Image (cartoon, rainbow, N blue to C red; front, top):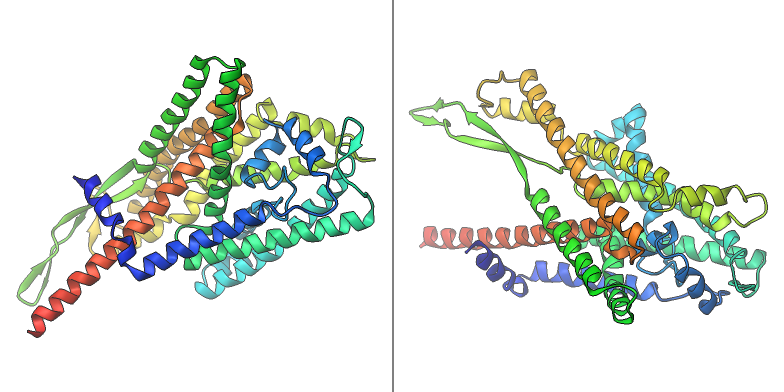
Length: 443
């Protein structure tokens, strides 16, 4: 019944002008992004580049290409994707913990948020320049069967490539911010989501083709799809899982009337951080590893070849660092988005308390302890979802799109977007009820 009601509500999207315009704006921005992902950087031999990236499937370059929606393998204007922006956002969030000035800006509300966003943009430009220069230098060393990927190497090629890639990243940053403000969902997550989904049909078709040619048995292919469905089910279940702390509100008398006395609960999500930990962890790993991959053949950077090898997906160092980063960002981002002290103070102001727990600091400590325990479970769930399928896939050498990280991002972003659409539908229903009530009152 609930599902039928949700489907009936979704059918009314076209009747709400604001929601319709938001969805159309989001789709338009994603179409622009996908169009840009097919505009190549000048001076590249596309056929040689395609052959080179066909050999890089399952490596860090293949993972970066997945997040960029295939823009890297085609070396388009959006080849760097949105990862420099994410890396800059991570650095700024980490600095707010150690820098009193940034911490004060964070507490200043909207004005402080705009200032931190401006710093994030500056950091994005710096990191994009760093990656673009490294990529332009490294491309000149790429060759397939003795033929260079770059048609005319030199300073002019490096300058044009670096400027083009940095400009593409800045434009994607603007698109993400516009989608967040004027569209549906988080703009940055939607860009990553669109990039992953764009590659799913070709990855599924490639897997079926491998089964048709006999490289994989039908049992193996069915096992892969079953694993993808199972991971999707696990993600949906955990993303909806909550720890509900009972809340009791004290009775208070106002005039001759008695208010309060009802009971409620405080919902704490098992995975409060959502899809942020794997995105942040992937971004931090990809930033140095991609630079190492592109410059390992250049003069003076030969040692980076060993670094890119040990940081490839499936390698023990990659798995260890990736796990540590996921766990760290699960706790770090949870601490940013949820403050037990503020929650305790709000409960105390409204006359609410947890049965058996004193209001004030004791309540804050209790909520913090519960949140820490469920975050341990959430971090373990995110780590297993991201690493277990990836480990199995690295052993079977199948397309990287069936990895746990990509499925987690797709499922969580879809659920968050649907929740926002449902919120708009519910607010529209409430507005309709309020109008009807005012009409009845006036009559």
